[in-house]
Image 1 (spheres, one colour):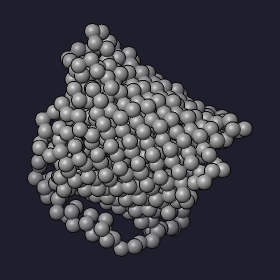
Image 2 (cartoon, one colour):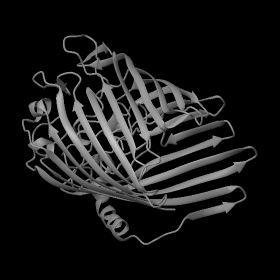
Image 3 (tube, helix red, strand yellow):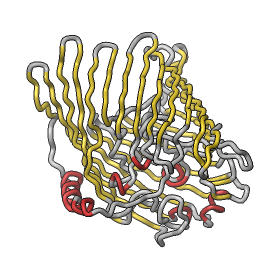
Image 4 (cartoon, one colour):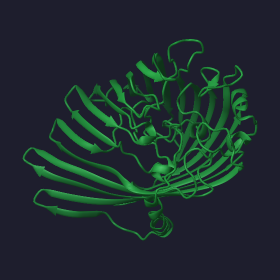
Length: 465
């Protein structure tokens, strides 16, 4: 579920309108009252295996004091309200998929195809920035072919590809309503196009990748390499990555970025299994275009996240702390110091990766010019359910919000999130959440209001397979 700010441009072509009625009717039947279905193995014959599945998802949200009391706005970058400070948002999506494998001597040919029918209704996406009521799309998502053996895996086409936990490279599809029918449910997950070679050797494995984003991320192209240890059981996983962005639409400003990073995931000591550590550092250099001129980029971002599991306690609580930093642009310098949020993803490890807060992370701050402290507690009443409690303190790194001055202030908001998750099997996932965020001085300077924003939300996903 990729959400990075850009300006919406809703589809008004007659072909878009022609797709609307079937999407509404089909989604209403399947989401609200779909009949049961079992796993489908469509074909198994002389080395050929074809399987199919169908994912149905829906998300409902109610928000009050939207944008801290300003109300929903006309689009990203706009501070012009459309009048509603209280809104309801219902998004639904239907995602069928087909996977095919053909066994050869010592190797396998494979391919996959997914499509999405998605819609947004009621008042539209809460903040007014990314999806409007009536947005509907029916389109393909993944479409790829590949070949693999014991140590090589080569694929081409639109598909998912993530490095690490998606802090830098996770999702090349933004999920805006005009192109993708919805925003919050994140139904589109594939890069628009990829060429990926995975080299699965030991003790080090690697990926060579070429990726292309959707239009909302500038139709950007990037190419790079990722290296990491192949055995993570004993100590965890360490990785290095480098890539260059060598094309975009000339508006979003990614073209020319040279990005390098180092990361650690699930780092632990065998003698202390309760403690785990996650972290990553990334530097952005190169020459990028800003206000019509080429400028040198010199930006960085990093996070550190220790976790502690109380295995012997009732409901096995897990405690997390995370500090995430994304540099902002310094006034009066010729360099571009502001880190660009790039292609971060969602739910790689938990609900908060990498949208940090159901208010601030969803609507306001997008892992750019940002400093965020997170403290989280999760408890597990059963092996298939969890309660979560989050506290965030959000601040800007430099006193500006996407170029809008904040009167020298950097404190943005304090936010509390509560959640319940239920996942009885690998088919069903259910989430219910409540979030409140109180604006600090910088947010008040931008939005001109100081009301506490509240969101109540629920999400359900079921996969027939």
